[in-house]
Image (cartoon, rainbow, N blue to C red; front, side):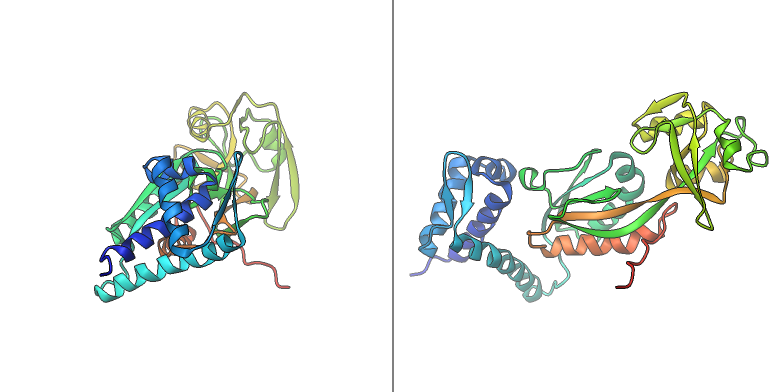
Length: 313
């Protein structure tokens, strides 16, 4: 008699196999799955016995997919996605997403701009859970079991897929007690002001462009340099200096008169915002849905604008 739990067991074995491949080791996969290394090893051995194939070549230093393991990897995620879709369809819930997403986003941007969209996404999908990690760094997707990341700035890694979501305009602002916008008419006038620098993007100089594409390089001696966006924000509001900041960060301050925009016809180059994930990884349904939610929401957020269309080829 067939074991009624056999299908569920096989799906769990496939999930474990994919996590081992993504994590790069049995111990890392065990940590991400919240279980022990012997348990993960037993599941891998059980899958190999059921298939009658060796999927991973083990050594003291690393795990390497066999040719059969590569074929299994390509099909396993598709099987799991199809099973989830089948479950939802037969239960009359074709739009129900289940499972877990692990997402990394920049600290300030993820807190102030993205968190509302993420929570609205969760509200739409009550069977889904999200681990929302706010840190200003680039992740190791495989070792950390990260499904995707939101990046602000260019993506140069060729092994990553970078989907453009929006872009962040960057403008010159100051406290009204520090500078009168009517008196700061040219970039040269702005150079005479005290400055606050965010070292992630500029220190003693930065380039501004006007609406006709003309460029001007500002050179100054900053009174404060920091790598923290919130410190820059507070320092500018306190009148320590002018700064170039993301438009979303100061939208409320400009509306309430706590800050003023200087040189409104000039901007620093905008920052592109991407959703990033490994190119060789299958996208589960829940990740595809999250991507679509972000693509729909971000361009319309205050202080953001749509990403430019790619050039025609």
